[in-house]
Length: 106
Image (cartoon, one colour):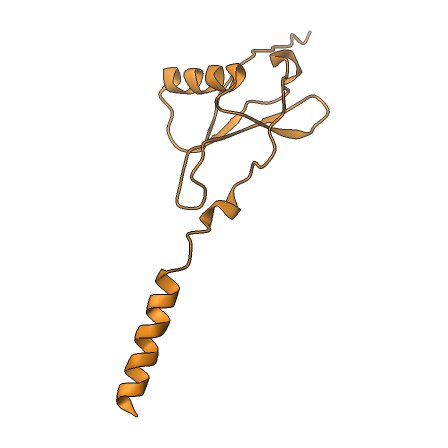
């Protein structure tokens, strides 16, 4: 009886290890926007670097209609956002500025 339990335990461990690593289902971005003008970006972009949950770099921007959109990191805008993030020397999930917009209140 003890050898059957050990065999079943080994079989269970082998089956669990053979499962594909489906950690990419925790990614936030599945569809990227085509093109977007930096003038339409309302808030600072948020950058999520690859992790054990998602193997991709993800960039999420909020546009003026209060909608969050994913930017392809390989697109010109995505590369600009990542370049600005590297220039500022920030790490982790950070927000970076691509288009400065200031308002003067009197």
